[in-house]
Length: 443
Image 1: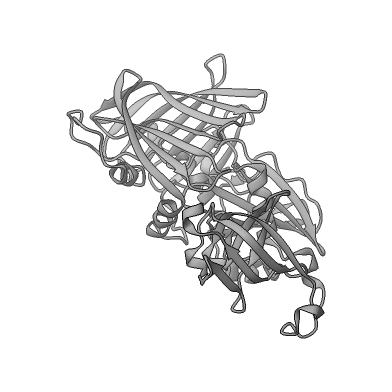
Image 2: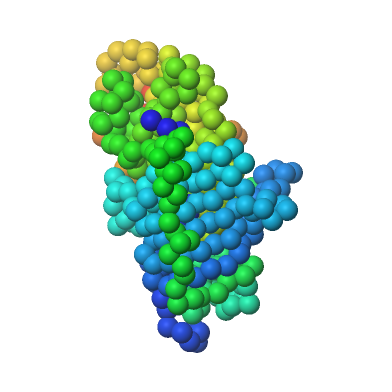
């Protein structure tokens, strides 16, 4: 299998230009946020063309690239990425069913299924459900992009440490004219913005034709497949010890595998409906290809998709004989929390304390006080930030005694920001024996 690139859920959405029509007149009042969200998740029925500037900030480094864009219904597109001197450096073209990426300088061609042509494991309704669970939506404006009126959809994460995202929708056509993704107070951001945009009745079919000779001599595969965990285990003959959900509201989306030298790299993708992360599993430390999880030719991609990822961070660790590499553009703190939730605690291989129901004197119970940072209802876990120290995750079990204001409470009653007066937990397993929360009025 080839290096994971454009048709993957992680990257295919980077290139999807979505935009159904609006009424021609500019709305007198801002549209409903859900209307704009549905527009971003749908394919356009209007032909258009233009030029975009894509800018990426990563620490003290900045990278920019211009792109000529041509789009024709349904799902036919052509993106010409320009070098600083205006010459075309690579081309991504789709006839609606298949896609080619032509690397002009190396003379190579990659081929795969077109954006939106592949069948993903996760249904769009499930992705939308996750997004609405993890983000707050609002609309502002109007603003102006490329001389056109636009409304701005803001996607604000409920959990700190995730990027914010803004999308500028053309008031006439509802095409996404600009998209910005950023982490507040951090020097990581991506901005894609049309500098010239125009609609047209039609575009020449020649623009979207694949090169037959190039297709026959294609030197790469633009995989990957969208496998379930069971399918990945059968395909590789290896068991996957990763959960279906991770801290931060991320749920398993799909998986695949590819080869780096003689090593098989297993790749699992997770999403919270908008942000994406990848976990790579290897038997030894492996330097992933420069394209990584973002894909060749798609790292700086046109706006128009709901998902647009800025430079990702990498977090690697080892548990037993297994090496893990986690990639995402969330904050470093959140990345570490996700990594902790992806693998068992360091003490998981130790034998549990004898007789877990024995009196407290036979088990080492630890106490702390602080505040609830986040709650993972699907995994029965919560993150607590101590008054002095970093956040840690704890497990709520059937034996957990939960109290608020001297009355019994449940996990569903716990909200981020709640004050933890007392947390008594097993220091080896981090299972909670008793948690006492402050009254709601004192939050």
